Image (cartoon, rainbow, N blue to C red):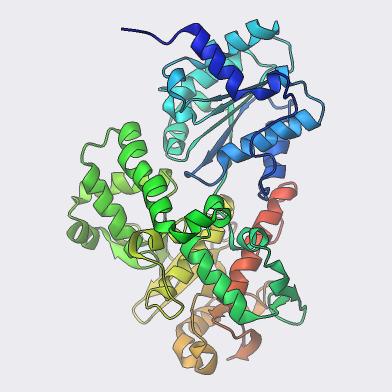
Length: 488
């Protein structure tokens, strides 16, 4: 039986690293539009003062490989020599089971680098190497002056965080799907927004109907950069998203990482969760509808969260108390377009638009894991509020949002009396975030009203998604500040 030769491996390395040769300034994908995440990631990945490996995590097809190559292009543009940069995609068959240290040794031998050389070593799709975190820890310890950057599917996140090998040696960087703000930038529709300081969000839609159409397009296809740019994918997004993203995660990545034997059982569970995105569920109901035992459900839900396919949101009661033995919770897709891929694209008046609009708002919050940990939904016998933020210090509610895809609540406030009651009970009228403390999203209405002494901001859902995504991404470009105000 023939074995892969050293010459074959070296030939592939040369192919994957064109900047080693005559095309020293070339980096694939360098001309593709750049995500807002590129600048903060580039800063972290190239900071040689921190002797840690950078681990770029994210779901499939959100642009991890692209951002790595754009980082390489930035290094070359800054004057770093091509022979100081190594890129290896561990998904390549010829690299199967080769230890990371072997790549480092081959790279150093090829160019005569010593242990003090300012090198950048980038490993893409690192989850395909067994015990990758142990290998990476060893590299950081053995070559402390080298800068190591790896990427992997978010399914590796649970494994990484549960393994002490990475403690103090890895820095995570999460790359989620596109925000609605990024989607509008990529589709060149940002002119639909203009400043308006007199309105609750500080801006307005110049054409709310057109903005809503763009929001609907975002719900159906907009979370993945490639789906936005490629006309072929845009014409059949269900084929691309379902087969190339959902199926590969459910049928290959998760079974390989966690030893799942009944793949169809996992698939049924995810399909059930996707159909019920934004709805409250219980383990009992979930077990009956999906056919998966409750003892297995908890484990599968953890896996799906680690793969960044879903996010679970816990319930509080009207007094903002948590439940010691929570039997119900909400599950949201981390990208609303996954639902369209499974069950077909939605129209503007589709019955599921309410829950999918709510999912899209949570999807913007998923870009900030720090703030996300403070978000809950409140439900009691006579009412429910979709999003409640508990203050990090006091653990008291200090703002809430009720997500609607209709203007009816603005015409008949009785439909949202539970939101008003919740705001009054927690004294939102005296909140420092008074203008935004109680917010109800609509389809087109945008105004501030005083209802029963409570300031209530009515804002279009699409505009709120845009502002929220924009403000959350803006935080990536500033130093962490514990006193920084929460985005609206």
